[in-house]
Length: 121
Image (cartoon, rainbow, N blue to C red; front, top):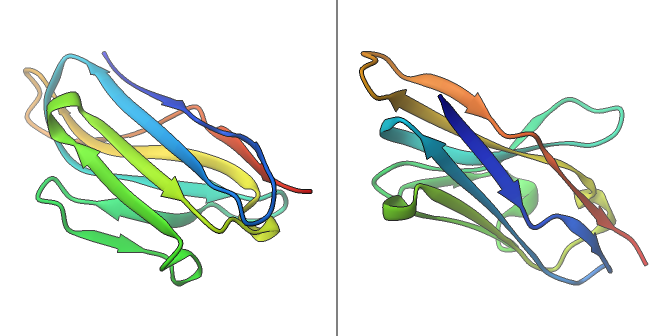
């Protein structure tokens, strides 16, 4: 089995920073894209940022210039550095990865359990 484990959420004041981490573990053959989605209360889940195995990135317009996604392929880990946080960034953040498990011929989409980020004074 393959798992995604997130860490780094919490309470932060407006204008502050947080870094989220997500590590994939288990019988991993290869990982394609990794990324972060978020879901605010009463809203649909939305893409925050995504990064390919080659390092190409894409992010939501609402976070451009404030959030940076990166990954460590050797550690199967993706990070989200969040700066200049706003109240509108409050949400549960979910890690995403497109993974091919060992001895499996196709990729599967996995999600983390979610970590709550609250931006409030």
